[in-house]
Amino acid sequence: MAQDETIVIPGLEPSEIETLREILGTIGFLKSYMNDQMIHDLSEALSTTFKLVNILLSTDLIEIMERAMQDPDLDRALLDPIGVMEKYTSGELDEEAEEYMERGMGIMMALLIALGKASTHL
Image (cartoon, rainbow, N blue to C red):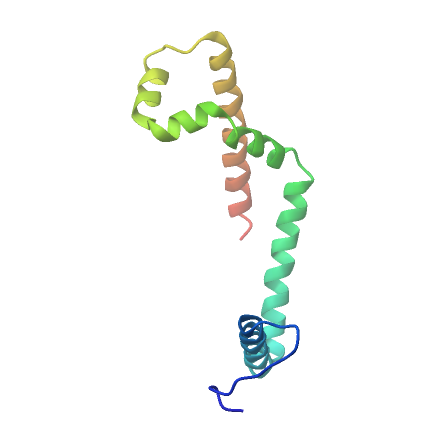
């Protein structure tokens, strides 16, 4: 079928028909591109990804990161990182902030150690 031919399907807009045409073209491309090695490589990549997702979901790390990303102080730090760094390095932290800093550093240190351990098993 020529590219400039107009197809009319009752109930579908021309833009929807064009989208369907693009999807079918993509499926045709994938069909001709797929082979056993491609499927094997894709399944390995997906398997690794799902393992990582499973590990992350079975820990509290995701919940902690989610709460941390929603912290208003993080927004302020993103807007003025130099000012925040000066505040933290000048000793202006109150007791509560210092405790949070220590907890965060502990988590980061444990993560760095775990990454180091994991890298020796490559």
